[in-house]
Image 1 (cartoon, one colour):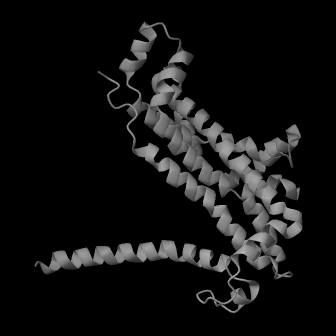
Image 2 (spheres, one colour):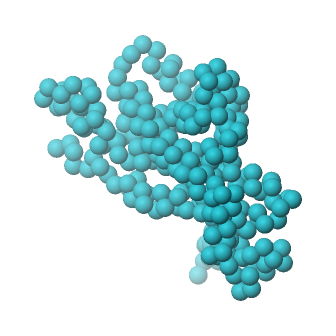
Image 3 (spheres, rainbow, N blue to C red):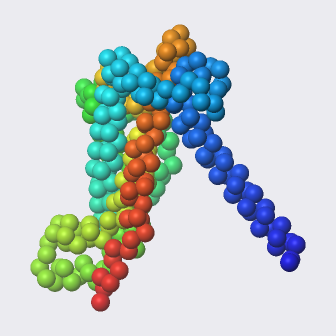
Length: 280
């Protein structure tokens, strides 16, 4: 046995094990804490069977403040799922246009897209608020929904996927058959770009679902809050009303589930080669 090779493998396994623990322990704590009542939380009895009341915490969660958590959850689904779906289609279409079409100053415009990738979203919050205020959509669904439809990084990914998944020969064959540009895109190219659409959708879904600063700037009506902002307001109230602590933790656990389900259900599309055998 070669000692350096063995030590190297042991070191790699140790680093991987530490990384796994670092990732899973907070999730494990959240699952266990969500099943505890308030006394068990303050007593740090997370690992014991005392104070085990997940059903009561779940009932309290949806009963607190007249069941507003359910409204927050639906709002998040609207903002995240709807915004990610429309945003993914817009980003893929823009990336496809940058890849397959030639127009003046194309590379300069794409350079602006790449530059926009490096701009933090918090920097754009105030200009977006001023634009929303000027158009009269502050404190409405549109103030949160419209800004998330445009994603520079998604446009970049759209161009990369278009270069790798849509052969030029397929487009030429469709045009020779008499298909217009829109028909070629929707009937041929978009099907090949399926993995790209799913990839951008998941990136957008995660970013919008976890988005906190933009809704905080745009919204003042609690019934329009997403889950992230609603739980923040409850957590702030928990300093004076400790009964909010168990429902905040249970709400945080439920807030993670859509992202886990989305990645579990859609990850297989990343690995599928939808253009395999397309070019004969």
